[in-house]
Length: 213
Image (cartoon, rainbow, N blue to C red; front, side):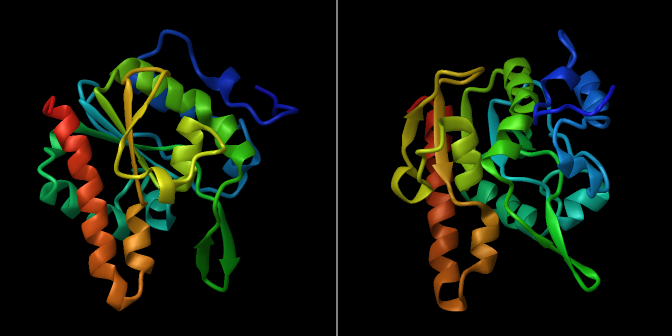
């Protein structure tokens, strides 16, 4: 398939496909230029019966190298926060709004760069397909980029985190927004404990929604 004139992954998303077929097709996605520098597409991971979908921003350096979401330092923070919030990992499907790692080289390091709204919009068909197949009860937006990808450009994580937000898209009817776990890692030592506690508190809102409370 030739490269698109505009940013849009839609032509690469096969109709009627299950998660394994979607994952295979995403490996060849050229819907935006990010594929050129990334090692590989990082598709979502988890069971198709998951009751909760957690949506992050984009893969990080380790995710890009290993081909799986949330396997780096931020993923370890998220795993601990889910446990502290009382969420069973088997109930969670992990994915990102953007499936390729965007970065700037700095010596031997690759420094994360946030995706643009245009890049997130281009990748939206993959996320839509995941949500349509999984039909989760609750979606958690991890950070501003994920929140905007799901709820629009007016979304502000500082104003809308920790509450049940209406969702009219595929799958669930409820979105809970919170910070990205990488924000905990970036916080100063004096603020890190509070940042982590806030993440757990927001995830507990999702846990209560799953419990029907």
